[in-house]
Image (cartoon, rainbow, N blue to C red; front, side, top):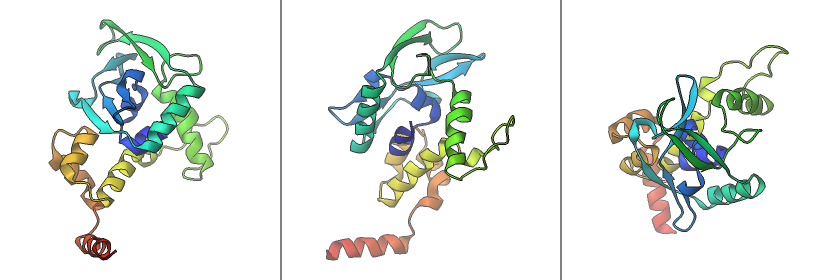
Length: 198
């Protein structure tokens, strides 16, 4: 999950909704066509946020991590309603599953795995017995999306392509959200000249 968030810029619901047929290892492409979300407190498959279907480049290390994960944890067919709680049932062969073979519940993942890992890494404090972990919105899985954007911007990727990969309908939104991560003009100039001289 971390590899998909940091290496492909997916939202948490999109990560949880990745099915086997969305991964094209031949063309190194991830087809972002659905997410796992709640509708009236019931898990459903739905299009990505804003209905923005997209193809995202699948980097080699992320593809390798997915292959290893699927070998260790074989994908499982899961049937959920489409879009709304009483929507038509859809069956997908899911990459990430819960401990009993069903879909992953976002709240369980966040409390039992994600925040536990953050605490173990010293990012947030350990929780007191019987108490929940401290709130840490800035360190949620969405931080992996920001990491993805910062890596691409630092590498010189253009805002239009980044907006497409992130599923933003307006590159202006991407620019407003991530402009502070763009390398300065002076730094780009130094890098460009240094690379030209090598």
